[in-house]
Image (cartoon, rainbow, N blue to C red; front, side, top):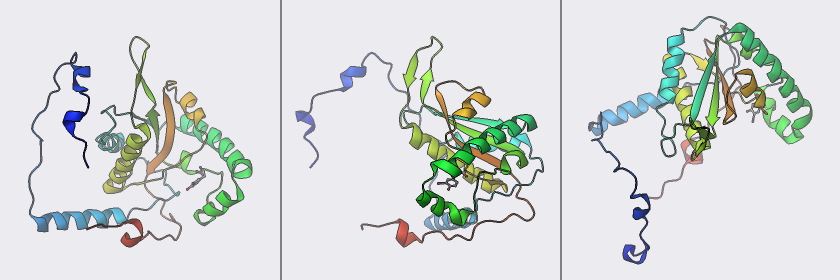
Length: 240
Ligand code: IYR
């Protein structure tokens, strides 16, 4: 039972010192016939269902504009209190990529050799991964996604961000979709612990690297593990 509003203490007065929020009419939306919606939904699903994560990148260059567009698409994600707590660092510089690969492989070696439990190592076995990260120097772009854990204001004070992990996760999903949609491939790589990326890329102490996403063309002989996606019945439940 919803609480009786009259019985609840009032809280809106707590923000009475702030200017009135501004609203504009919902832009760009128009009603589509149901058949058209179904057709678009099917086509989008079919396209997304063809996305695969490969580790085999060609070193063929990709124009910067395509990376910018993928980042802009990611930046359309909803976020907690609209704080937009994502920062994308796009690296094409060969020397920087080499340094990132060096530091990553050092961490990954420790992860695979020492940090992983046997259970984890066995879970990864079908993916065929190890500490060698060729994609970090092969792919023309490495897009490193940082989460802005808190804002740093001009006067040095901190401003809280909200639902940062959720917001950044949604942005990453849109980035992956944008890359696939434009006809390139990417990989969501997590070389934990990732503190070295903040240092190598000169980012602030309020940012935390969450994903390294190489972007490029797949190599002509690119392979993917033989995996299947869970069916609808396994990932959903409808209460109607
Ligand atoms: N971060 C390591 C290990 C790794 C972990 C998971 I969970 C994966 O799905 C894949 C790899 C790496 O990138 O190799």
